[in-house]
Image (tube, rainbow, N blue to C red; front, top):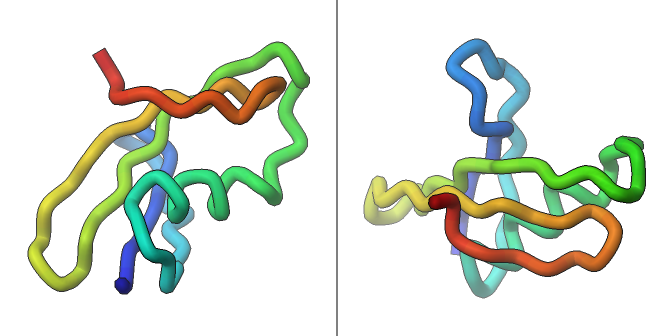
Length: 70
């Protein structure tokens, strides 16, 4: 499925496209290139390009644990 992913920030301009099975997989694929501190967590917005639905995920960069933004 086609997804686009960006950091959850109103000024974020860096968007990448991914062809992944799930929105969670697209979020993790986006974060593989990040070089943040290992104890950091980051929130990303994933958009399903087929439906237009957006989901927000908070990802712990140290563990890879992914959960919905709260």
